[in-house]
Image 1 (spheres, rainbow, N blue to C red):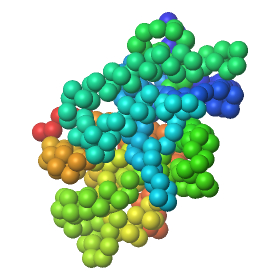
Image 2 (cartoon, rainbow, N blue to C red):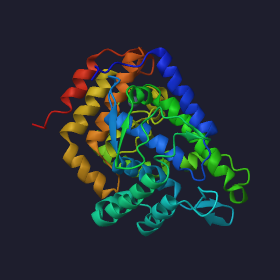
Image 3 (tube, rainbow, N blue to C red):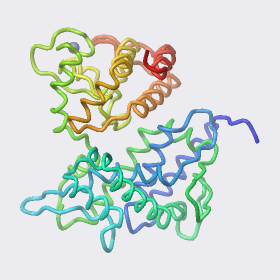
Length: 356
Ligand SMILES: [Zn+2]
């Protein structure tokens, strides 16, 4: 077998063009194709690397991403006096949406509770996995009568997909742009299938994909205690209002897992905005999460907040790796940005060592 190599510029452009074709020309009765593409992109960040190598994904892993993507979308949408679950299919409601909505209802919207009840979680996972194997997985790359097999080979059976060489590389390199396009197209699809309920509501995308800002309030007391009343970034006391900030910016990767949150002055938070924080902040963040991971995990459980430190670390590794490759600047203080050094590697490598 050949050594993996990153795709050439031309190959990367071709990847983007074909992806665009799938989204524009593929005709689909349910929103599954969007979920599937989003899930694959997510898994490339979580499991892949930047060598250009092929990447094996299990249909069970794709199913888990499906549940996470559809979870917030299966909360009833309220429009005036009407309240219903948005349709994601031309005919009957899509099977995955029905199943996820049923669990959303039974677990009062708490995905953390559902995951803890191993049997219900596993049953839902298996059901969704079956649907993915039957419906979108082997049909995604068909456009009209043409086959556009650039992501993986259509095997038409089995529980494994093998992403072609270069595919994981491209999804990682273009992740914010690709997911932006997918979410935009997905929102249009849902809007089209719910005209009666939605009318001209414009903020559908925030409902489908936005951060659950309201629930962030639950973090305040915990983070205040962990940070001893100080701002995570400038380390000065917080005397007035503070914001809960996504350490890895939401705009880069919508990571709503507990370890990603820090408490900061509103001024520090809004200045950092969608930028990655500099190495000294990264070091403090990794130390906090690594050293206190058990205590934090317990607190997150009590607050009903999902958490997964290894997955969070994987996303951080991806985010800093991409920024480094692209020569991006990172946020140091309100007045100060500077190019990212390769110290991020050491910092995040330390975070993988077992706690002392
Ligand atoms: Zn501050």
